[in-house]
Image (tube, rainbow, N blue to C red; front, side, top):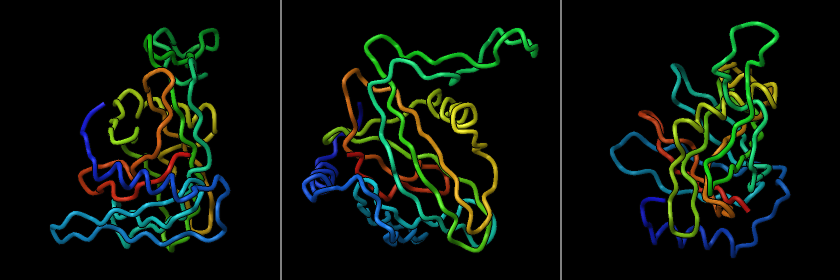
Amino acid sequence: MRIRAAAVAVIVTGLLVGGCSSQASTEASSVAPPMDDGEPPAVETVPYGEPFEYVDMSLDGPGTTWSVALNNVDCGLNSLPKADANPNWDGSDGIPEYTSAKPPEGSEFCVLYWDWTNVGKSPGITIQSGDLMFGDERFARTVDDEMRSWTFMDTNLSVDYAAEVNPGKKTKSADIYTVDEGQTPDATWFPMETFVDEAYVLVAAK
């Protein structure tokens, strides 16, 4: 766990007390992308299961507008099928290319499943979610889990994370986190922070 943030705890508590529904709304709430004016982006909060609008400006061009919804949070997992590359795979059919991922002792996996619809006018690719929130504690995902998420999407969801999605088309994604045993997140930041993106949407995970 890292980064104590009492102000964020108030936001998470507000999401939970506000009666977050697991049923997705039919209309996406509008979430404005952060402005490149040197100011930190305003935090937007989204209830669990409710679609929200996200504009991805990470690629060249006008950006891609998405309707995104967190539709399932599956925690307490002690194994993930075909989520790790098999170091013994030699390219032959006799040895499996992927193996089941196992968490370290005292840890479990949480998988966040997302629905995406390209509601814009240009193609785009999906992006991973960011840090988890457990109460007022912020939890950063490991690089191994980032890579494992891409493998899991390919082998379990039949989705190529790097494939472009055309306007009007839908796709899905999954984000894997290794967390302490028995823990379930209260919320997740979105999107994953990069050199061109800041996590400015807080999505309730229950």
